[in-house]
Image (cartoon, rainbow, N blue to C red; front, side, top):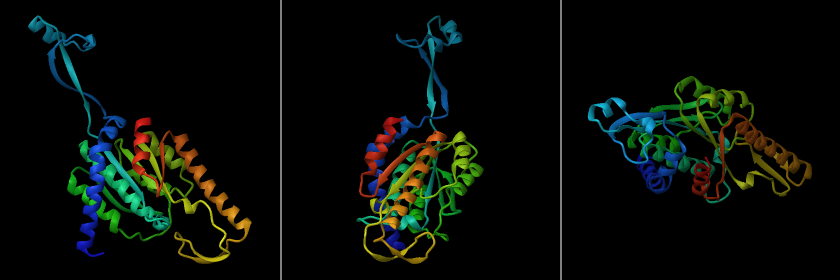
Length: 287
């Protein structure tokens, strides 16, 4: 992709996702994810309904009139976007690939964080961490993140969620809001998620295509495994083959749901042909 085409694509995503974050997500995001606590702001005269526990007795004695301390939420937070860039993210059977939706969701979350003056970091992972951009603030930083989401080419096509979570725990020492965006067709990450979720507020955003759930009966078909790169002949006419595929898919899905639930982490499921806006808003409101 040449520079002109890339910038055009970045701008298109910025316009769409910034509008969403400005008008829809920033308020919901702000109320869903709280700051580190309350910090002292000012002292003012007592008003009816004020909490008497906030009376500043020194100032009250000085002016011979009740005054209260006013506190504000210490807002600044850090968001880390963990994005799966393995081979399966290139799958798509409708008008969009999973990768396109993943990019839009990540960009929307990044602009929502920017609206709230929070820092945003990025981790792109396959079966290892392929790119890490440390958390920073600002529009130019978000645009860099979007550029990487669009044009970064993974070295590996495989997935290892546990490895990505281990990296998160090693690099992010302070509490962060973490959005892991993947199809979660992986396992063996229960232990690392348990450790990471003790420190961080983690949400798994599962992006999937309905055509991945079942194999249609098409007879003998050459199929490419996006994560191994191998082409093999598959008899989709065999009921046993179709059932084994569905069983494998369901096992991975159940593992994702159970593992995230046990660790106290949140989950969002969004199909490529559904509105991720509706799904994310519903999730924010339910928190």
